[in-house]
Every structure is written in structure tokens, then in C-alpha cells.
Length: 222
Ligand code: ATP
Image 1: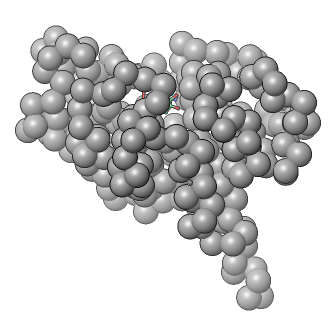
Image 2: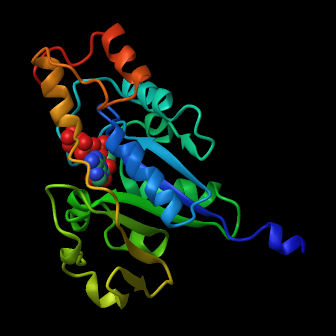
């Protein structure tokens, strides 16, 4: 009975620039949590995303907006590990961190949109990080259709395809396709709306909207 109470915990790591966090992030995370029976999802804002232009808004602001956005959801947490680490925010370092931190027997899944996953082969320590973490790939509106869920070149030989939505790595970690509602919402679009003096209501949570206004963020075109 004791051992049952320490059943394998599935933990999601949701990395992003969150510039700003929007309801596309929140709703997709919620659907993934339900679909994959994740115990919790940790939002991990990047200090410096290595594959994007340096965001005009400070990491502390992006982190605070993520904190406000997830407040009240007991399954959502925030980690400022990439802010503490500073420098380029490499997913492999974050995966290592959570591997060390998590209770023994936990299963880690890195949650990522299909747009970002299609570039995973350019990440640092690719493909070694597949040894340490599973991946859940969410379809992203305007990006690849679910049927184009394929492994980037080079990785295929390390995986066995279990079904249309699942690959298994030789370590046992899986890459799973998570079907989420298509919400064509992006931070880029939200920043452009603010710079253009347009409303962003209902694209972000009310607390995030208030924070952006109070701190006069994104008023200049990025
Ligand atoms: P930007 O427009 O500035 O590039 P973004 O909206 O893509 O930002 P990120 O913080 O870069 O937001 O996204 C973090 C992760 O969430 C990425 O893996 C991205 O693919 C995924 N994601 C973001 N928005 C959506 C969405 N609407 N549907 C599915 N996945 C999403």
C-alpha cells in the first residue's frame, strides 16, 4: 500500500519566453495536463531564449506575468531556475535541473508546440536530452497539422514508433503528440496589438492585462 502512494508522478515542464504569457499557453497546458494525467506543470520562463531575438521585456516582468497567470491553479507552478542561471536558457540544463530535483520515479515531459519542436534538432546537446526526458508535442494553429508529426532528421533511428501519436526512445522515454484545441494566439500578435493601441482583452488573463498596463509594457513596436 505504501508503494502505491508513491506511484510514478508525471511532471510537465513548460518552457517558453512568455512574452507575454497568453491564454493559448494556459488552455493548452490545461488540456495536456488532463490528457496525459500530469500531476503538475511547471512553467519555466526563459532568461534568454537561445533561438529567438532577445526579448525587449525583462525576464523578471515575463516571470511575474506567468506567476499572475497561473495563480489559483494548484496544478500549475512557476520556476525561475532559468532566471537564476542567467545566460542562454538551454532546455538541456533545465531538464538536468528537474531530473535532479524530482522525486525518484517521477516521469518528466517537456511540453512544446509543434512549431518549436520542428527546430529541436538545433538545440544544445541534441539528441542526448531525449535520454533524460519525454516530450509532449502540441499542435499549433497555423503550423504543422497533426499528421505531419515526425521526428526531425537524425533522431528517427533512436526511436520506435508505437502508434500514430507516440514514439519511444531506446531509454524508454516517449515523445507523444498531444491534440489540443487550435487557438491561433501568439505573443507576437499580442505585442503588435499593444503597440498599435488595440485591445488585448481575453487574449491574456485580467491580471496579466493589468500588469502590462501598469508597467507600460510593449508600447513600442518590437
Ligand atoms: P512569440 O509569438 O513571441 O514567438 P509564442 O506565442 O510562440 O511567442 P512562447 O512563449 O514562445 O510563445 O511559447 C512557449 C511554448 O508554447 C512554445 O513551445 C510554443 O510552441 C507553445 N505555444 C505558444 N502558443 C501556443 C498556442 N497558441 N498553441 C499551441 N502551442 C503554443
